[in-house]
Amino acid sequence: MLFINAVIHTMAGSVIENGFIETEGSAIKRVGSVSELSESEKSDAIDLRGYSVYPGFIDTHTHLGLVGDALGFESDDINEMTNPLTPHLRAIDAINPLDLSFKEAAQAGVTAVVACPGSSNPIGGQTAAIKTHGVCVDDMIIKAPLSIKMALGENPKTVYHERKESPSSRMATAAAIRGILNEAKEYLAKKEKDEDQDYNQALEALIPLLKGEIPAYIHAHREDDILTAARIAREFGFDYIIVHGTRGHLVAERLIKENIKIMSGPLLCDRSKPELKDLTPAAPAILKKAGIEISIVTDHPVIPIQYLPLCAGLAAREGLAHEDALRAITIDAAKMAGIENRVGSIEVGKDADFSVFSEDPLTISAKPKMVVINGEIVHKA
Image (cartoon, rainbow, N blue to C red):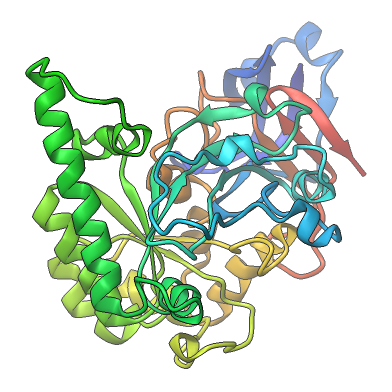
């Protein structure tokens, strides 16, 4: 397919004022100025005159598909709260692509997400980067496992304190994570030496983390929990990204020393628990100004997935540069998730995921005229 006469925000360089995008199969074949096209090429093209094209939006931390919209407990598969250490659980085994929220995501121009286990367990399982269009999750995967989900602070403490089980304190949460990581190190060492040992699926799941093949996504709101995450990662030598980082803006200068990256959000919610008392939509701007890499997330269903662009717009209203707000849900989000080879910008060879707007997509009135995922028009207004 050929799309012509649009203003193309590639997020990979300068804006193309009168541009075209040619797709072939699921990929982008050509991008450039309409002046490069012959008249015969333009004759069968989709004319987007008066519209702007943006890369598909990316939400790097959601529970999309793991909790069903309006279905209650029957479709709530975010947390396995019978064991605090479950690194072997896979988000893809609980994702329902036919949940209404996938359709709403695509209609809003959100074309890719990272679907994650929840934060009730110190180690909750394996995340997956997926597209938002399809009927079988196996056909929607960009990368899985993408990361190991961990959690510090109030969530695991509250869950297990109520059950009078460990971990019911921050100390025990950190100790539980260290304990299984040490077990995994020993397990890996024996495996590399071909020593006999029983298969352990939980420890097997941690090997890619310890070998640097995937990072940890570590849920942490409070600044001390953020720095505990940094401490544990430093001890075991694995890469990590902070999910939420709600109070990180209070100690931004200290976080720089740890080279911390933050998936900031949810921004558009109430202060429902003590850890959120300093929640502010100005956080992304403060973090970015300090030099911290950010993406903006909804934590769907905390904020419904279709409001990801609105969250970026709110961050822009509170001081984040407009371009940085766009980047936080496109190319910077893709880089944060380690999937920038596939998505996040409009470039030759990348997946043909993009949306067409008649106005700034970060405004409350903006709705896509058209959304393309994997070279297929999946929404047309």
